Image 1 (cartoon, helix red, strand yellow):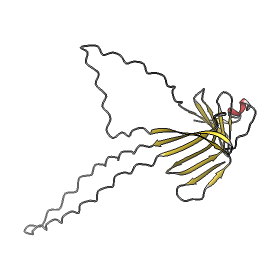
Image 2 (image 1 turned 60 degrees about the vertical axis):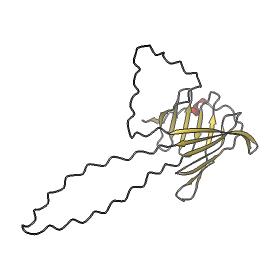
Image 3 (image 1 turned 90 degrees about the vertical axis):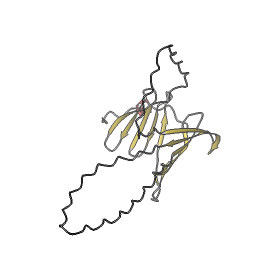
Image 4 (image 1 turned 60 degrees about the horizontal axis):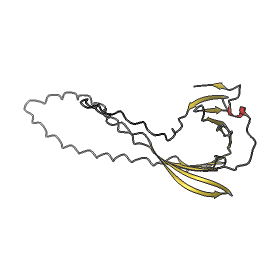
Length: 220
């Protein structure tokens, strides 16, 4: 069961979902109108649209194992070092994710392990202002008539600084036996999404459950 509480005060919505996992690590998440099949070995996910009977393939990047970094090339004496490439000013930094171990506990009589992920989105730089067109020349004043002094201009109000976006925080509690999530909670500026799973022992799913139906059309 997945419940979504929007941040704009709209009433919460609920939908029933189903998740399956194969012995080789494939996962399938079924929702009322859509299914997502994740294949870690092929590093892609299939998104099935059951209304249009279409599917698309999305590449996914898995975290690299903690391998030791190869040593750097030694600097030859007398050879100048390569200067560092200058950074483009105004470019936003990539999102920063922090992971935190929440330990072990029991949920509904099931032992679980929890992790919390915090994703800090960068603040986009302000767009440059468009150049102003030159003003029209003023009409010459009548001879002998004094020019009226110009009124002082009111200084413009300074723009408030851009506030940083709130981070997206995800808490995931998974079973250490099956590796399946038992409960997850994602909070961000969009609201809060909570997913509560009821695990049950099922036989190994058929391989066709992790493939698109033959009558579905592939789209980009």
